Image (cartoon, rainbow, N blue to C red):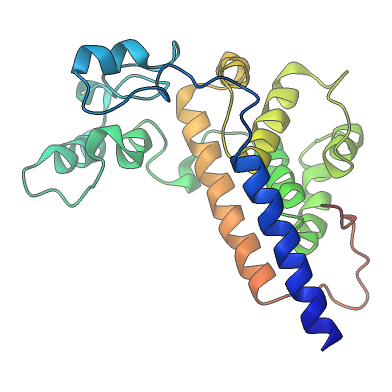
Length: 233
């Protein structure tokens, strides 16, 4: 009975914290958040954040069909066809994906960056299995121990190179705030081109899925393997 009571208390505390966060009115609403529907296209476009393009309704413009290879053109056409099954069309995740590599196995993102992203996801998902398997790979790929420790212990980004700092900040905002600020996006896009950034987002999604599997089935490391990630929410 005590374990059940404790579990209920934990859930209650968690729900309360979510409600407090959801009700936070410390910042005024943006022009977009203040819109009341119905609105005209002009009103809608005028209310979009400064770094959002009206054609894509996102932070990069719609992909140019002529810039795509034959496979990409087929993907483009399928998203605008009358019988398309794509819910978002070119303005959704499928359209964004046309900016990235056709297959993550063909990505041009370097191994060091890929491992940094895997560690960021593992840290933010509190996934010790995933982290412990990938830290040695990250070191082999040339990721510095000092940067790994910044991720591991959620340390300040002071002194971290701009590119790596932008990626770590992106991951922290994404998982902790469930959004990415305009400032962080601007820092990212200075160092990562849009194709690679789409690939990095996909990779982060893949490893989030892996973390969900490992957490759901409570997968433990072997008895002879010491976890390299502290449990720290």
